[in-house]
Image (tube, rainbow, N blue to C red; front, side, top):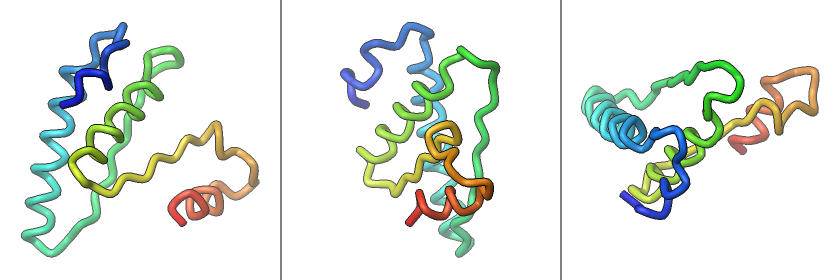
Length: 92
């Protein structure tokens, strides 16, 4: 794990991030063995609880481990009446 990545972690989310990276990589290994690679994770919390910070750091941790990561920030991508189009554009 990158020390610099969580260096400004004011809400002490590093441990949860490390646990989730381990969970997701383990889950991916199981799914791959079953010839299925689909998994959706939802992070839900009130405004100001550090979701964006957490997800961005989590994504970087996974990228460091050579996993493909797509981050979709609904606030940054709110330029279409159809959210699916924005989501597909981000994946593309």
